[in-house]
Length: 434
Ligand SMILES: [Zn+2]
Image 1 (cartoon, rainbow, N blue to C red):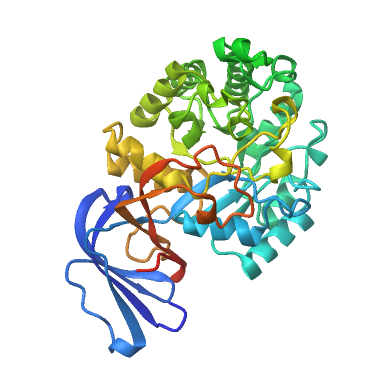
Image 2: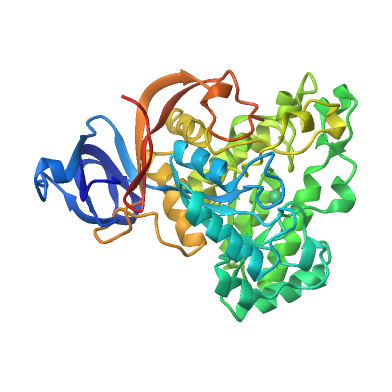
């Protein structure tokens, strides 16, 4: 809408959990970066040359998608991804905001780095960027960062993601400290003494391939510890990339007991299993690893019943040389920003979740977990809007990706549904050519 004063979205099928709107044909008027009206038969506010009317018949109109777990790799690993390319991939995938994890090089453990990420995002970004700052200096797991300074600089949560905070006393201190600022702690839950030598899930496939396995217990023990510490301190805890059935059972019980915990899983954990590693496929190597069919089914169930609050991608770009090597030596992680939406739509197609629940998982709940704007199409809200074409069928190919990397296990997969239009703060950041 760069040259337009207004944008009128006509006849889209609106889905907005924040207002209880489930698939209702409505119009939305965007003015000055905000939603100035939502309703039926909204007239254009001015002459045709001062704005634009888009007919969205047959398309879904939802609050902008929010991914609270992304690795943008800048500063320091710009050969994998930059804030510019990563946010362009986000916009193409339908996202209007991403939370960027701190395991850059150097790690984001200072107000200066947080500010530089935000400045870069403002200059080159195609979506909002919410920096997550490190819990410990240098992500070394020893001494805490300056939470107050980091929050003042614009950090929105704390995590040592990429690594766990292995020392329970340090994590306890971090949680106690977080209370002073009402800050969120995001846990990468991993017991390194159990996972350290492994490169895939421990089970029949790892035995067959002769690869060292990571037991589900490496994740579950760590999640249990984090929950006990949250219970002890009263801190607000978010568990990243949940991958096992046992983890879900622990989180479910904690929620029943009133612990302030939320949790996310990623599309690859509800789409793939350890079988994807067959043939030593390094594009199926990530941490935590792909698990079993039983785990996959438990994750889908937990996304439906609310035990899992959000879907986040753990978008982790790597250069091809870091993946074209022996399985044990290959880097962990896959890109996810441009495949998350069609993979989540598969759950809708299967009837596992409703479209309303999908939008809650990938927009409304993430906004509320990180306590930022977005996740709503209410009048007066920032105009962060995603328009989904739910019908278009296509194959995921390398040339589709705006990301600088293409390490995806979904290359070659036939999918249905795509972001047709992404609007961030009233500005069109992605539009499929018609
Ligand atoms: Zn992690």
